[in-house]
Length: 287
Ligand code: HBI
Ligand code: FE
Image (cartoon, rainbow, N blue to C red; front, side):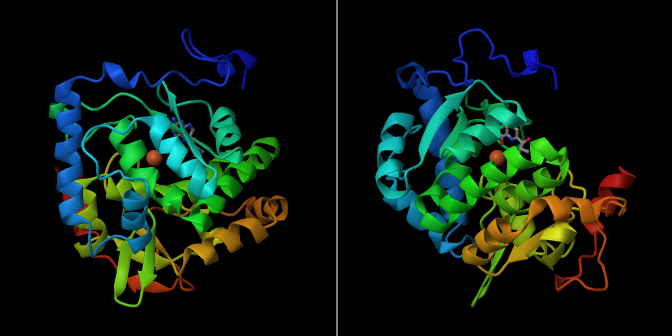
């Protein structure tokens, strides 16, 4: 990567952060946040990991309007030592990892338009804050996110960011967790999406497979539609342990030369919770 790729855009600090400028949100934007919030809060109880709902309460995110990052950071700092900082949009990998490694979560400050209520490409403040921030109030998950940032800095030096990005994708963004009363959601990409909050748990189409770090790092993912496979962790402790204990350099070396796996592959060694029909993805292909 050229050095200039890491140069922050005009108006941003050297670490790519910008002021959230909370006072500049319009009444319509606060109202749209409330609408998104109400829709997800009605859907998620019973479907999401209880730690997520606890996070919403602890951080007082149930209060109306787009959260003020300064206030959110105060509560988060007292709880787990994390902060939320605003960025203009996607930031370079190194910048992203550097923030996470220092317990700073970067969040977009803009909100989707009403036309984009169900789908948008770039992470907005609803995805970043509603989706990601509640679990940062959980001490184990908070440590996992920092460990991921530290792993990212090491992966960058080893040229293995693409593999590590798959770990982020299949856990932080699209992870499921097994609980005594069934599978629950915890990935931010799912919990901030009305459609995928239903699809990921209830639809017969996708595979639901046991988490395996090595296997997951070989698995491609979809950025354009619902996932064809979800990976299920047993607990946040397990996820943190697997990530901290994995000696990434030999892990990456051992994966060298192994073919990537398609988004719908099931291997003989997989722990299969659901063997998906893949009907959803197949219908999409015929369109
Ligand atoms: N930047 N703002 C922002 N948000 C992300 O989630 C993000 C990013 N830059 C890079 C990135 N994610 C991923 O490439 C890493 O997880 C690998
Ligand atoms: Fe995200």
